[in-house]
Image (cartoon, rainbow, N blue to C red; front, side, top):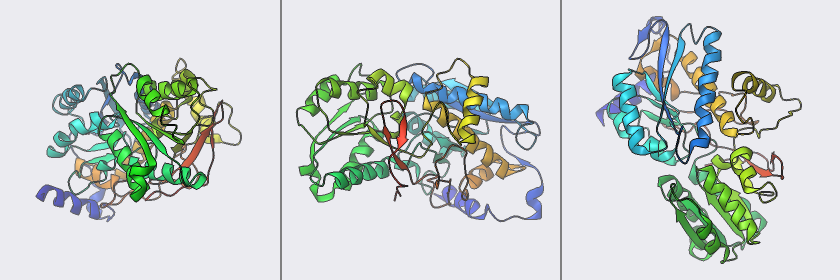
Length: 403
């Protein structure tokens, strides 16, 4: 607790500039010439389609390095495969911190893998920056002052609340069926649904059914949920396979509810195409990133992203929006490191992360910027409802404010 209070004081003081702050001050993994960055990604296993995020991050850093790096320092990314397995994430994190001597851990994929290493990193005062999860647990600066997420959209509780409000605006008496991943993230999404429904939850939720990440199929769960004839089908998973199977099976049995897909699954390449583009037509999902389009009009930022992908990763599926997220989270880290200037201690890196003010990123949608304070570690709170039109994701709402 004393350590958390000390860091909180550092966070609060981060914006105060003094002549001494112009002097170089380094922590582990930093020198005049480089910043060592640790990362884990599911390059194998059930979540491997998401590994393009890590490949894009590496390519983005290569481009930054070719232009001179950040404040003259090259970004040295050391990215290890954890197969989306928490024990492997723990093993990799120890190697990165104790063996490779990285300055911080960056952009670990998923709630369960990130949770597995959070206590270790916080105990050792190693920043766990912009981890990839929308769980609300990451907004806990008092107890986890060294951990901060940068999600695809508002946290799971807010996402669920926005989804429920959107559905009830169309049908106030709607009955809900929920398919959720049986881990902390999936349980939080379900809890968010129940909280949003309030006193009506027991009556309004026709059924909720869980599945394990390693399950080969979710067909049986979807069939059971379809038998409820619920008006709304809410699908939460981080694995594209489960999301695609859920959409396809519901379509095959002729169940046609309003469908909400977890923000991390709003991916044409890895979810909608395997599910069947026809089957996915009309699916809704909350997002903060611009929907990917192959031929953007009047959008220089999306054009720049496409050019980057064709140049740096020509064999990658450009429709996989996990790449678009990788580009965005890498851009966010570069902004943060520039903000640190020559004070690259772990304490100041974390302090600057907690003092982001209206930071625009090229692929965030209009009106969405990164904002944090020492008391609020949620960089993104708002989003737009997106809808799959049978070919692309398109914006289907005004900006929706999260809580």
